[in-house]
Length: 368
Ligand code: SAH
Image (cartoon, rainbow, N blue to C red; front, top):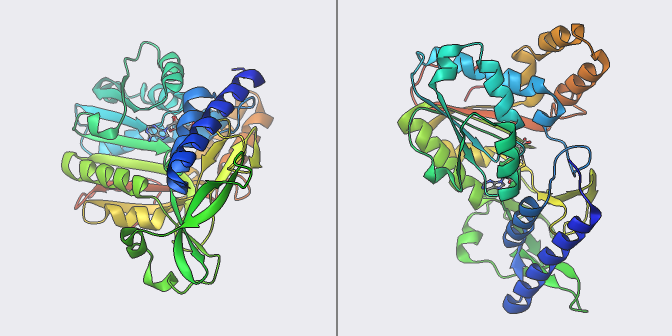
């Protein structure tokens, strides 16, 4: 994987121009619209992952991540009574590494391997191409949205998908709740944050206990994430299977500005390097959980560290170490499970059908 700075520069300019033109026409852009634009330009034109990209995700840290999830899925399939047809549905598969590692792991269960069909929800043509390379000969099918994926018993999974869904930011400004927006600065060339009046629908989503929050407080909500979550929950509830959602974020909703941009492994200003930095927000698991209630049973969230450890990642690391590259394996293990790495901030949530007696591994004591 290589990135030339020329390509990045072009992308960034095109994205910036598109954002500025839209703001010139409409006066401002909500943070959600800005994120949507920044992210679609970014994933359509960049190769974000790995040392030469902008960030490293868990499946790219080590094959152990996908292997644990493959083992977890095999256990779920056995508990479900070995259904003969299983859709493996991944949302936002990146480079296809996680799906490839899961499939390699389940090869040791031929009945399960024979039962699965592969469904990838991905909007970026560039990443679809990378996924096709990673999954050569495995006949995946691609979709723009989850709605297009055929119904049926499914294991739906997503790693770092929800953090890329647009959020609205509501801000307490001069004693009133406002929508946080992006505007042109006085020179007309740069971008700055500002405020605009809230629609009554947006005003209604502010929880009662934070209405009186102090000046400058920011409340975030992601209607796009909630809509996807409702669809996942409805599918699992009606067609069976399970959903496994992994992302960084918080288990309790509250006040805070979590909009962030990462460019070449460093945090950067979200209003700079548009189209060549990854703009994300923390995932609000509490609100996602509410969106699933009544449609599916929610397990967790538990931390990624708890989840992977209880699935036996330490034993797997020991076994792999005996085959060589001990230092690399130990450092990957640390990165995935330690609180200083991805172990605490990243959370894992699982959905199973209402009334199902399947016990997803890794959630001892974490069930709701
Ligand atoms: N799961 C991968 C990649 C995470 S990055 C990993 O862990 O390495 C986010 C991924 O979600 C990218 O593949 C991006 O193109 C995709 N994506 C983001 N928003 C999307 C949307 N609304 N619909 C489909 N794919 C989306």
